[in-house]
Amino acid sequence: MKTNTYERPDYPPTRSPLKAIRWTCLDCVGGSAVEVERCCDRGCGAWPFRFGTSPATARKKGREVDR
Image (cartoon, rainbow, N blue to C red; front, side, top):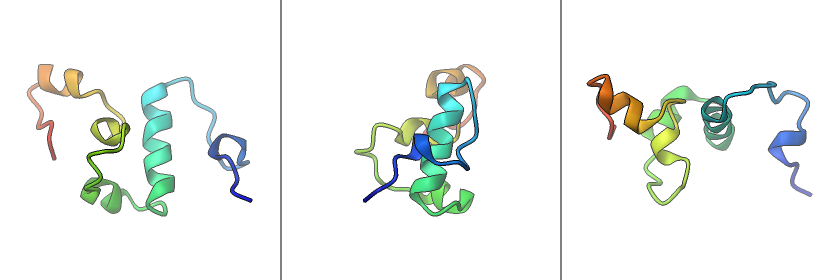
């Protein structure tokens, strides 16, 4: 039986939805930040938010959005 990510004891308590998405992405690729960066699953709803930031905020600050 697959364990729900939100019920895992090592899931960090957070109030930020963006940080929760980041954690989910890390969990998906086995905990590797490098693999999160390399993720090519653009069909995933979390893909634009995988760095823990909003793409709209990144554009406003002049950062690269589509990595």
